[in-house]
Image (cartoon, rainbow, N blue to C red):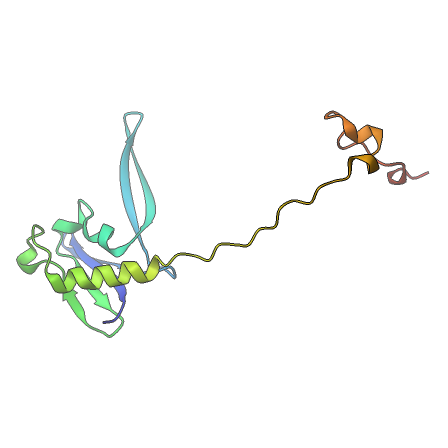
Length: 137
């Protein structure tokens, strides 16, 4: 099965289409109450979270696949039942975008020989003391 290219939903009489980003996630407005005020921020969400969004789930969401297929998410726009086919498409898409990244190999920091430091760098206050070579006549 193909990956999800876009998700659309019917909002205020118009069909709104949200295209997948390069990472495979969808940019959706998310509203929170902060200090008694509503704040709306855009967040990148996986496909399942978009379908389960409080507003989108009741707005007849449709999946657009790379293969050109359009899949209506809920039968008869009833958001209480998610068909198995749609569940499988969402799971496959979200798993394909959430592959773990390779951990960087880190090398431990090299020890500094304390005997080679000059007396100005031994205290915390003079750590950035300039060298004599920095001054010009």
